[in-house]
Length: 95
Image (tube, rainbow, N blue to C red):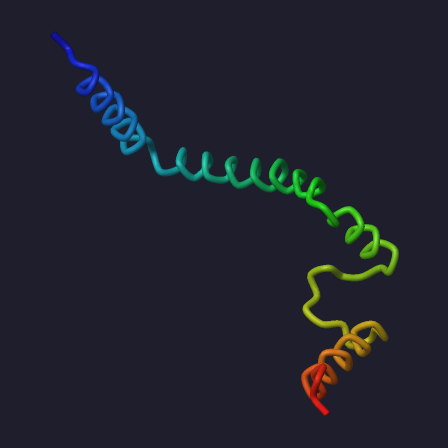
């Protein structure tokens, strides 16, 4: 008689044994495919995040490089840094 517990363990061992026996180049190709799928499917799902569409429109409209850390040539970045600096130096309630 075969119990359900032994069947699930045997099935799990069979999958891991199959994966361990797979050639390294096959694992590499499968890894690349998984990364590619994540980039193009999960990345496209980010358009459903609230505010992401507006942010993309602003980036396109102002011709910004979204991957840049700091923009020294934009007036908005200067205003933002001044606002943060003044907020830290003169917090509300401090007289």
